[in-house]
Length: 273
Image: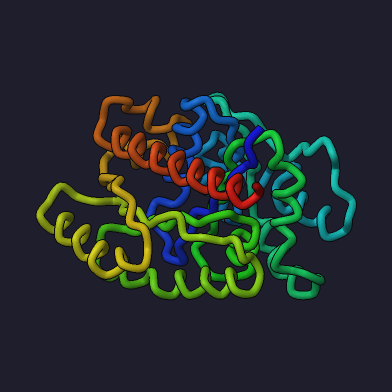
């Protein structure tokens, strides 16, 4: 079996569609026959709620418990925190216990790699592991970048939102230098785009400003009512509105993610020869 690829979806700015994108990318990869694990790395539990767990704070076992077990070296080999979703993929929920874990990591040896140790313990059966990062550049995000092969950056189709990428890119570069030498930026993709000339201007601006240094993906995720509805529908956009513009955009994004993964697998295989 090919080596699993671990992808962090990150942006320190909230409201850019991270959780929505992780859900739809995961569902789309599963539809393509891939074995998928989604991990909610946000104490707010937005992805967890989208995946049908409406009261994440009532869940008995979540990512927070699993990370505490890693720190204490008492991991449960049966991994009861991993749940199955009806669209054919697995996921690890999160709730506010993750906030306490983040605070406690300050006093932990190798605190930047606790999540990496957890991911390494569960990733073997999967083709892709997607990490839904919280909107910050704190210890949880550093852990997610440390655990990942590459990062995808969703950016709202807005000039100011695009400018905010600079700080995140700097953090990625620092993690690459000091903690995870294999970390790469898989690509930037635009979200919440309106069908206006302004959208075209923003797409052009992002490609002009960042395209020389960062891969800008072709997929542009539109702002649609149906896409907003999936936060409470417990259905990916592929089931909620399979013939809509948002579903088509996410199909394009899923194919780009597969291409990135296959390129990295081929590169790893070549280096191993």
